[in-house]
Amino acid sequence: FEGRDLVLCWDQRKSTSLWPRTSTVSPQKPLFLKEIDQLWASTFDAPRDEDLGVSGDWRRKVEKPPSKLTRYDATTTVLVDNHLEKFERNPLGSCVLVPTWTASDEDDKALALDGDLCRTLTQYATGDCQEIGKKLAGNGIVPKEHPSPTEDDVRAVQDYVARGCPDGPLHPSLE
Image 1 (cartoon, rainbow, N blue to C red):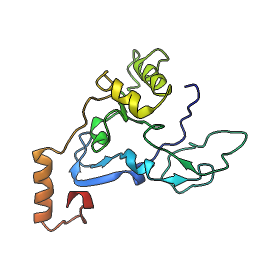
Image 2 (tube, rainbow, N blue to C red):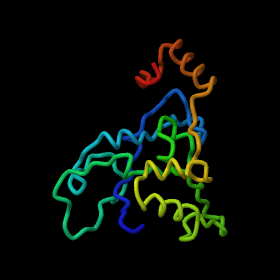
Image 3 (cartoon, rainbow, N blue to C red):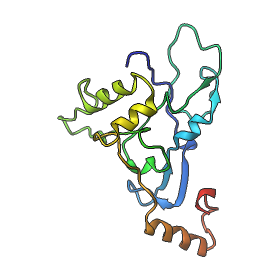
Image 4 (spheres, helix red, strand yellow):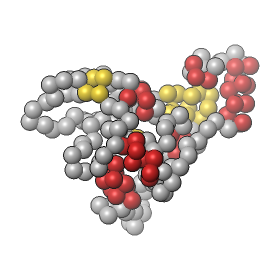
């Protein structure tokens, strides 16, 4: 995407665990939220910081590394994931929902240059991600709303607390 590079991919260590809430992907796995505001609140030296909870070799291959600290904000970033549940607590328009890739699906065009994902990311790359995201919300891969905890989620947390939090303390956001 002209003028924009993928610069990082935060792993689970930078996500918020909402245990005892579980993921729809696996009832044994805690729900981990990807909260984009945590990225926006961070400032780091992209070429040198190594303990950021970053997966893979995300560092750009550049001739001249940046000379100042890198900071991201709502105008320059978008969250991409294949599970809507991870978008809870994020601003509308800041997230792109991609289909889950299946190796056996020969017709999978999710990453095609003329596909929805590339078209959408190209639109984001033209300017202010926050403003563009608001306009794109509801277009199919930019959700028009993000999930909220269900009554069952609330009951699961209440039950966990009533049992004395046997697997460890709650995340502060659940107290």
